[in-house]
Length: 196
Image (tube, rainbow, N blue to C red):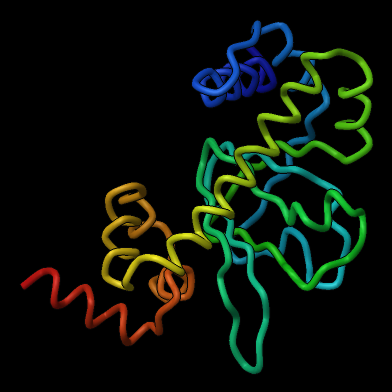
């Protein structure tokens, strides 16, 4: 079994709850993917560059960031079996201020904007797959915004701990703090208070 057959199965398992399509369609989708490997802290897409890929994370984790004055804000944390992209730049095919970095050694299966457009033109199911990917990316982003506006810092921390407990062993606490909208010191106090 080759890596693209494996990734087709991984994609099918990930998306079956949203869109249950035949493995053959995932095979044709996987055939368009490029395997890209990144070391920990390696830049995947730089700020002020155009995003050319939608990335399915096979192993590892990826963060999307915006740089500020002497600091950076983590706007998304993505782990294996999910998609990561500067989707705004990808859709517009224009540069954006967002940059993406591997938070640990990571393997990404990446699809270019051109190849995704070709899949759309080939079949209705290609459109459905693209729609499922877009929906997953939108839901991720929208949920982050809702959580920042409606939950306390402690509630955001507990939610992340409940939904992605493995992230605390894999990603630095400064990135987690930024992601949930607190300083590293506040996150340290939160963790200490909760463990008491």
